[in-house]
Length: 408
Ligand code: HGY
Ligand code: MN
Ligand code: MN
Ligand code: MN
Image 1 (cartoon, rainbow, N blue to C red):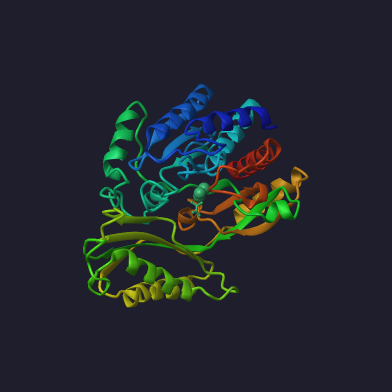
Image 2 (image 1 turned 135 degrees about the vertical axis):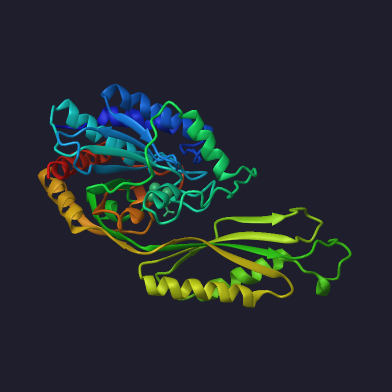
């Protein structure tokens, strides 16, 4: 049983054209028309294979390869199809297409599996359009109830709930399924999004776990004023207080040995006019750390620091995402290691710096991830790249892992 490097690569490049921006990146936001089109393209490849489609209340899309014992919990494999606003051609989508390629190779080889294998495309993993990320997998795993994010708005003021309803209406032809079930195991193939595998000349990462992530949304309320007449000492300048808050937060992470990662990636200012003092500044905070206690303490310090940095404005800090560090199941890690060895590939255990939907499957079932190298470790960038051979090796290892787990 061999996966087809060319078929998978052609599909990857076809998907990359859905949302292509200048250069080589993509902008395929969750629940956008491009996301709709990408899901239809995936279905156009999957349905002729005889895979049974279904979609749940969060828009998570499933494609089922039936097993000889349909009553047994299925093995689940996949990732996400949405991208960052200036994203790469592999993040998330390779995992979904690798799962399709692996299942197609298994079926073409005429290999029956005891357990069913379900391919999944999770809704809104990136959180670029609607924050936070991982909404589909969080709702699937019961981490947050469906409806939790219906009022979240994108930059055009469109509500997540309305855009989700629009997707589900567009996919009324696809059978519905209840939200959540307990798979036998979950395997997520994903690009590494870091430099380690390439630097060590390795083919496969056997992911041991994922560091924790916390997201906050900070809103600073000031007062509009005339740029030419309002005395500086009397202003309630939301931008100046935002600068003070970010400077104070930088002081929290001044130690170069610190493994805490702190990012302000999104800033919005209102009314956003050159000659009016801003009365609202909104910015995001993304914190990452491998230790849950440290992430909790440092995250709580962020809130206190922001409040303390205000001069004359008022700040509200809302936590929008809290994914604790996750450790992956030895059962899945061992299956990945055995598959890589059987393929004669060079593999090593390694942690993930990026969060993934797999983080929320850990409490639900034995979960693991397969990494393939990212050129120069670049991701969330148009230059993100993994080669045809690397993507094929990852899909081949996945196919072996699926045969192994679905045969148990
Ligand atoms: O942000 C992350 O870690 C993931 O790539 N969405
Ligand atoms: Mn991803
Ligand atoms: Mn990503
Ligand atoms: Mn992910």
